[in-house]
Image 1 (cartoon, rainbow, N blue to C red):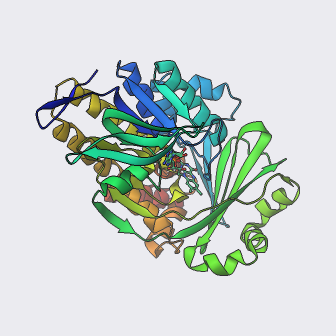
Image 2 (cartoon, rainbow, N blue to C red; image 1 turned 30 degrees about the vertical axis):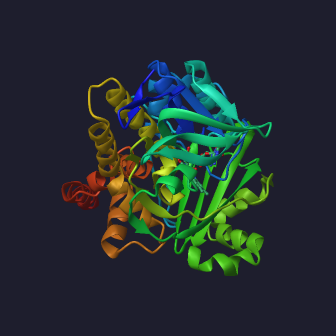
Length: 416
Ligand SMILES: Cc1cc2nc3c(=O)[nH]c(=O)nc-3n(C[C@H](O)[C@H](O)[C@H](O)COP(=O)(O)OP(=O)(O)OC[C@H]3O[C@@H](n4cnc5c(N)ncnc54)[C@H](O)[C@@H]3O)c2cc1C
């Protein structure tokens, strides 16, 4: 039990850490801290299994995190089909590569109703106390420091709980972030209006397909129960106009990829359309008595499907930093400052790439030349798939030397 002091007086904490929000960021944070022996309370206003508005590509590096935590086999056992290939259809040609590494070759696209429950159960198994249907209404602060939460239980009882640190894993509309008003930086406007639906009878052969269309996004991936998720997007500037006849607007995007459209016509639509635009920004993720993980601390457009992996990385890094500070190995400020710096430096290149990709603007001529040069070069196509998965950073893949090597390989092939 961590003993917190304020103005020289000990504060009585029941918990070391309270985590608000129990999906991709919150449950792993709670699990990892509970496994270290800390007393953790994990609350969420939802009751699980619970779905959320999100598509759910889980790139290989996120699968690697699940494996480190002993949960990758449990995910595979849910019957979610593995995805070994990412295909990028440019209309006249296709780039198809492997998104992962030799150690972690595949991605998954698990329904959130299944993934989030698996993560919550793992937190409970680690010893975290779970309260579902618990709505946090207020973040309690004393003498300039967060000391707990006040909320309403499933039965409607108002409850206050105290902890050394309150972690906001409560997503884009984080009540914890609202309460502490952290610095916001690298902010960009929301760029895309994404929508998705589920279809049966649309086999994907273990592929995540993306169609590179002018001014439009289209992608599909296999998920649980023989379903395929189909995702479309257009610039946010067209949000209002296209919403007037959403169905027709979605079908118009799909028709831009005639072969895919034909496959979809033979399939069965199983759900309505879901969707929500996403802003882009970073928040300072720590302060006296509080921390932020996942979307609460850093949010980016879903076009590169990085959110779950980012949430997992935050959970690991934040839990480590809190452990270091609780154990006295490092001051809270120092450990949490490292957490913030590592987060920002590891995501920055992908953040820039994501914000650029989400404009849906055609790539510049030199990039189009590079795409053509990659055709038939499996190593280059694997690299491209890995960049899109976040296995390698865009800065690394698009480094001058790598581009020169791919262009030289294409010239050599043409000479033959
Ligand atoms: C359309 C769309 C498509 C996406 N596609 C992908 C994708 O393919 N791959 C990918 O990796 N990412 C994707 N993302 C991003 C991904 O959904 C998020 O990054 C991820 O869900 C963040 O997880 P989180 O745990 O931080 O927050 P959330 O998943 O938002 O969870 C927050 C939790 O906090 C709880 N909560 C909030 N406020 C309170 C309160 N006051 N009291 C109690 N509980 C509270 C909520 O009930 C919720 O359960 C997509 C997002 C969108 C919008």
